[in-house]
Each structure stands twice: as C-alpha cells, then as structure tokens.
Image (cartoon, rainbow, N blue to C red; front, side):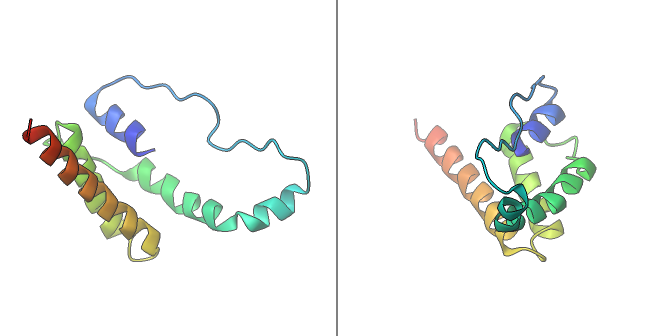
Length: 105
C-alpha cells in the first residue's frame, strides 16, 4: 500500500495484481479469521489512513515520500498500535541506509 500510494503521488502508473488476501486452504473460514483477527484489525485502520493521506507537493522524490509517510504513520496510527510506530521507524531507517549506500559510491 505504501508503494502504491507513493507511486500515485509521483504520477507513475502502477496496477495491482493478485488479491492482497488469498485463501487456498480448506477448513473453517470463521476459525481461520478468528486466528488472523489482529491482521484484519490492522487493515481496518490502515485502509482509511491511506484513503485520506495526502503527501505534500514538496515531496518529489521517493525518499521524501517515504519520510512523509513515516511521519504520518507515526502521528496518526502509532499512538494506537505500536506496530505502526515500529513500521515508521523501519521506513526512516531504510531511507537512511539507502541514502548512505547511494552517497558512498
């Protein structure tokens, strides 16, 4: 979802493929959902966040977009769910590493 949102913001055409959720196992779907409820609950928070998120026009590089996205995730989602704060931290770390690797060549 992050990549799709950033690609849309930067004006790149990206099409999605297979469904995000694919259930190919047999068994009780309700019991399976019960086991995976935490992930479903996170998606319930995640989807509206991305639907309402507007990246600033000043974000013109992928790196800028990821940092803005991390900031928004931390501010809007992180206070409720620690996993979102961890995700935001990971996005910032990824950009720092990406910048370091690309500047040392």
